[in-house]
Image (cartoon, rainbow, N blue to C red; front, side, top):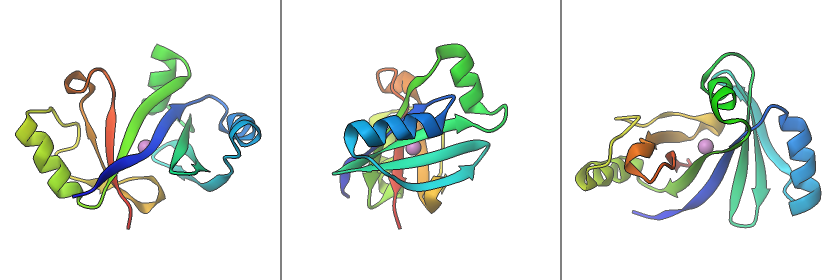
Length: 130
Ligand code: CO
């Protein structure tokens, strides 16, 4: 099983403006955007990873996150080539899971989240690209 950094998820109230800033700062163009699960999602491409900008399109989890915490880092995502094995390993390690099984995430990827109470307060996402 491979495991590598994939992206940082960032909650924002204005994804278009932040995408413009990051493009100017980091040469990180928008490589994918969609409305997914009540969010406007933009992936910005870097060498070796992405930023995933999450802007609420309705009163979903990102809107609640912004209400509680304000804008900023929401999650860190690790890419694996075997998300089922990664979840099995997390169970073996005794980590609490948000998602017991992989589910369809943004960009058509399979994703699963680990509970931040088990991972130093960091919401961790496993992601498997096609
Ligand atoms: Co993500």
